[in-house]
Length: 572
Ligand SMILES: [Zn+2]
Image 1 (cartoon, helix red, strand yellow):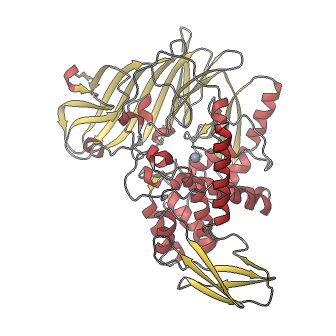
Image 2 (cartoon, helix red, strand yellow; image 1 turned 180 degrees about the vertical axis):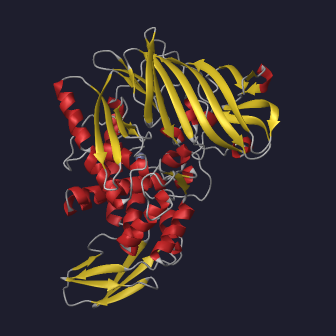
Image 3 (cartoon, protein in one colour; image 1 turned 90 degrees about the vertical axis):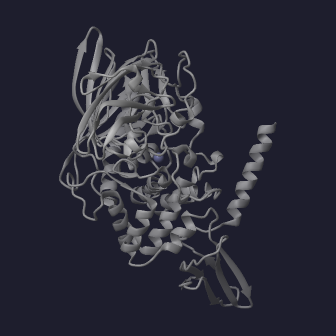
């Protein structure tokens, strides 16, 4: 997800008014609760999701067949589904279940199997349901359905469920490790509306004024499955990558006037340089046999797999690129190909995704744009909670600083931590470690890798190996403690002494550059401090190339001043 310009949310075209269903349960509203034992005892082979979406009543009806293989003896199937979508019926391998075998008290739906499964046995459960799904109040920050209209009054519909989870519109395992191996989507909408979907289009049929669009995607991330419905036009092309494979490019957009067609083409023209940057820096586009897909949405954006949501309204930036398109695209590597095993590790999605922006700008525009973007991120760091708690987390408990989570720091501090790591270990080790985390190999080849899960713990191990040394002190200080390392400077005559200080203690042998007049001194800081003898009246700059993230009292003072001014303004 992207989070920075909250202001845009207010201007997004938001929902109409449907009859509001009862509030979601706390369980449904929060993605990533621990999985049920029954969910840990299956592989999720296939989800076949048929969904009829009716803009006139802002309601849905679903018919879903889910296929599982038991990995241990199993008496019931457990999936998540918002209990505000009543079940019309369920069956197991074609045999209807009695009502007593179906229960969904708070959003975890249990189906008692007529006959327990043995390990290795397969079953297909079919679940029919209908209802008025939740409507997002502030998509994409709070998710659900967005029922909007185009300028000429046609339905324009999107879903975005990162925080709450897939269970807002289809029965699924609402946990980052709950990906089905394959999903087929059959989305029915009034003709002539278009459905832009995940993966590959496998067909479209039209009957009685309704169209059903079929889409098929491999290993979709759970919140990466989305509905995008509107009177779309599509821009299409093919891209021959540096790895030799051909990647279909698709952009679904709203036609509007002649100007919007030009703007859409401008965005489409950014696809290939962005793809090539990621392929050069990280590795092959993970879903090259499906597509790079983007769809114009009534909300700001989301990393829906192979169908990234784009709602940045073609906003120009002095950098000359569309940051939102770039951010969501980064999640195809950091989020969809490599998915965090637990939401506690969400910085692996947002921190890496955010660091790709200054790196792209460095490649596209040069050093001024690179450092400017890094400094913009640096100004936003809050240090209120550690980036990683070391405990299982629900997603909103990480994204929301109001709930005590690291909030926006998973983006901006995550990015600066990675920048510091790269400067510490060098490009070769940094990008080898990144590649291994993303693909499980340092030499990924299109078509020869699978999506994978990673964790902070795994990344630390990979980084240690790539760097050939133990970096526990680095990750401990930056990820597991809220306060930033501080550099204490003391002058005594011509002696400058610099000492690393950690609020919670511990070693911090971070090397440091100091510019003395025009000469760069390199201090190894192996025991956490260094001494320099300075010439008279020397101009001294600590860390002149801004390689090391550390506490900056002047930024804290500015942040406090800004906050006070905002408060005064709000009170007026
Ligand atoms: Zn994001």
